[in-house]
Structures are given as C-alpha cells and as structure tokens.
Length: 215
DNA sequence: TTGATGATTCGCT
DNA sequence: GCGAATCATCAAT
Image (cartoon, rainbow, N blue to C red):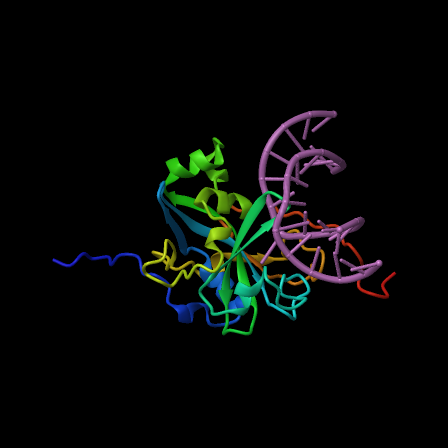
C-alpha cells in the first residue's frame, strides 16, 4: 500500500520567486540538506533574515553588483555563500527574478540528520549549539565558497531545501530587527520560531554613523 | 596599492 | 561585557 505520509518535497523554484520578506517566514521549519563525501547533514531552519537588495542599506547588494555578490543578482533558488571576519562563512538563498538582488540569510536551526558528522565538524558538546548562528550553521553543514551559486532546486544538487513536514503556524513566528547590522537596524526583517531554543542570541550592532544630519 | 571594515564566534574577565 | 582572531572585499589613493 502507499505510505500514509509522502516523503519530503523539495521546494520548487517558484517558492523563491517572490520578495525576501515573503520567503523568509515561509522558510521556517523547512530543511536544508548537504550531501558530501563525508556524509549527509540536514538542518531544520528556526531563524532567518530577509535582505531586500539594492534598496536595502544592510544588504551586500546595496552598492551594486560585484564579483562577490553576483549570485544574488541571478536566478532565485540558488545559494549565495560569502566569507566574512576572515574566518566564517554564511549562506543565503536568493529570491526574486534575475536582476533583483534579494536573499534570505539562514541564521540558525536544529540539526535533524547527521548529528554525528555535524558534531565532528563543530567540535562542541551541546547539540543545541551545532547550528545556532549563521556561521555555525554553515560549519555544521560543511558549506563553504565552493557551494556559492549552488542550485538548491535541482534534485541532483548536493545542497537542497525541503518543505516542512508540518507548516509552522503564523502565530508561532516572531519577528524583530536583524542581528549585527548597523544600517537599517530598525526594520523587523528577522524571523524566528518563537518556541525554538536553537535561535541565535540577539546583539545590536553599535551604530556606525547615524543617518546623515542626525545629532 | 593601501587601509578600513565586517549579515561572527569564542574565550577571558 | 569586551576584545582578539584573521582576511576577502571594496573605496579611495
């Protein structure tokens, strides 16, 4: 007989072909998986941030297209991976049609498959901390610059994203200002699952320069 | 070519 | 709570 519950469904490209602020909350509860020679690790997303693109002062795309952010200007459903602070990687999922550089930063989640491998990569004891933070999430999944541009909608891709087993109800989602950004720090484009402990701690970035003309 | 900075994390006080 | 680690990227020279 057919199983009562179908297997996980990979998210179609159309899912990402809309504004980042719409994609971000919809990604909560979804699963990102990375298959490598060492094995498979999957993370159920608990916290994300939306970046609107060239109109968003906090986005890497704010100053226009460069070699680093080129993937964000491309087709939706691709991974934008960048290197920062001289030692960390962070991963985004590109939204909207080519030419519109919006994306969703994957900030935190719970490792739901491949815990043993994730633990080896992260060398931390607490399971809750394996993917709690954008750079930690990348390290647990084994994501680096070689995944920049990966198509997460391709069934043959090592990096894929799956629909949640059960959708997260809207009432279970919280939102607030984005972490670590000094510009556009007032918009509430960070989304997380309220009841989920595997969410990164919020730290406000010291304002570099108040908007021109401020006191 | 040079200099400043960062969508962070970790360890120490 | 504070600062070091550590370097790709980008604006200015």
